[in-house]
Length: 337
Image (cartoon, rainbow, N blue to C red):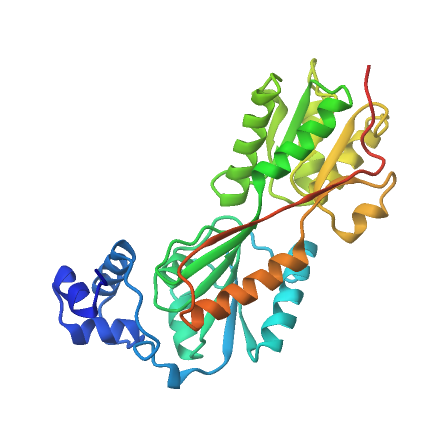
């Protein structure tokens, strides 16, 4: 039986007019009421009709949020490629972009929902960093359609796109295992983010699948940037029992790890093999060229654009799309005895 606006109003203990105001982003509804009604919509699977969403008020403008205190902004080589493809695709579909700064992080003015309402965006792309601010999830739970990249969104009009973490781990561990490595270290992202947690979990499960040791000393929490890869590798190399290979979940951390190895007077891959993840442009030009997992950044950007358009047009319900990665073997991994 189809859930109606009348049913939502009854379950929330509010009038149908209040539910209608929330759907249409009116400002004169309290935050607690708004949150309760949106949660009930999500629980009941309520999908308003196109007329209910006021299609005549569409502006053909889409917002872009770089979420998190440590965020993947326009300097990040992975998300620049994703955003470029998103911009190209959404532009071909007839939409312009407005980028929202988060320089007032965690301050009162950092209210993405209010800012999206002010600019009357039809939808929003959210690109994840670490330490996500609460206002991002307020936007996620609003009636504004949102698509996340590498951030889990659970709002009634939200979806998200990410690379398949299980496939990434499987390709990395299989490659190292077949090259004789049985002691594999891991440099990951900050615990608590979707990408960091999912990749670590997938890596540990894959090690167990191959019967390989999962040692806490061989796991280092980084932040996806070069310096943390450098520090993590130094810690591994100082161990009495150090890994023979290391998987860094970003190419930037892998490049930092390579620098640490060289500073120790050792060589990659003769003394230790390294695999990165992302296949950013510098990965093929460092010395030696980096073995890595290629994320299909073009596909992720294009997929995010089409999913967001379908959410705006009310063609689909919330979904999760995992994009298949590819192993690119270069010169930082080798066989061991």
